[in-house]
Length: 201
Image 1: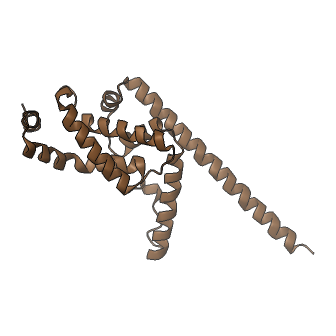
Image 2: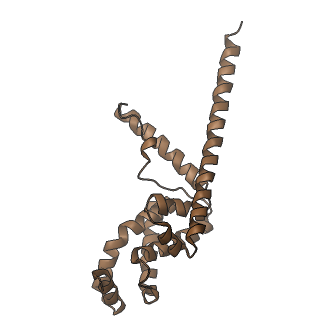
Image 3: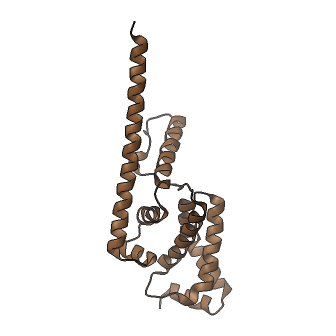
């Protein structure tokens, strides 16, 4: 039995200090997941507290065949999805942007910050368009780096279903982005036509 399993056994026997150690070990990934799903530090903090309360109450049901980290993230994920379904509107907070989305390193600092905020807001708004279940697989895969097997175990489905959902989520994001790019191009063309009309005698 490894150190984590020993810690879990101590919690099951009522050791409060052991539970505090578990919370300290997992509070950051749980908070980060909730923050990205809910988009609010206050709500993320509340979600983390509720997650650990549920962990404590349900620890007797934990199956050691599943990674403990995946089990905790599954509890956090289900809570966040339930909360989103009640709210029906959320922003996904991102604290790491893909390299391609980062602004030009040679730009002036204020300009870099403005561009970074603009890119982040664009990504947030795109991801917020995804239904909760599709948003979750994107977050779990690309921000928590979970395997298909781990995601399937968390979500109570098959690996093929996870891959299919992730593929569909990427397609949806690509479609949203393409529509925005088309709309932006149309606006630019309209502005050019307007400028030409004003320039003509």
